[in-house]
Length: 182
Image (cartoon, rainbow, N blue to C red; front, side, top):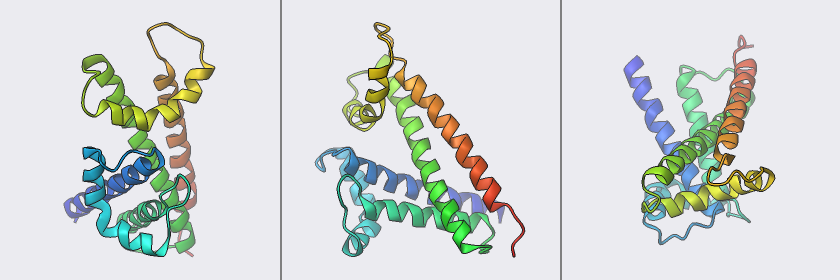
């Protein structure tokens, strides 16, 4: 049972990751002709297109993909809780926190990959995509930090903020989710 749950939770997290990328590509206005976005769109069309018939994307948010991330997080939570519903309202809220945690983890690794690529191969094919995704998050911090020349410390500041938010989310989800069922 342990290996099966681990494999299923990994698959569910990867599905959630793909829908997070889809929503993030939409918010960052990544062109659909980009090969990376085409891959994500093709992989996620099976759930996102039917959801788009129910809920339209508005403004900068791809609400159908965000809702699918939330549903995926709820299924993940349901699987981890031993297929038992303790308090559905609490689990719905914790699923929102899990979706946020997945997005923060995705952002964390995107920043790490971008930093490594900037040292190793700044002209990598994925570099423009990473810049389009991450620069809107880094630019407000860059504008508030003093200029240090060739070294950009804004990714480090964002990574620290992400870690603090992840610890906060973990604490909140543990405090509200781990109680005896009524």
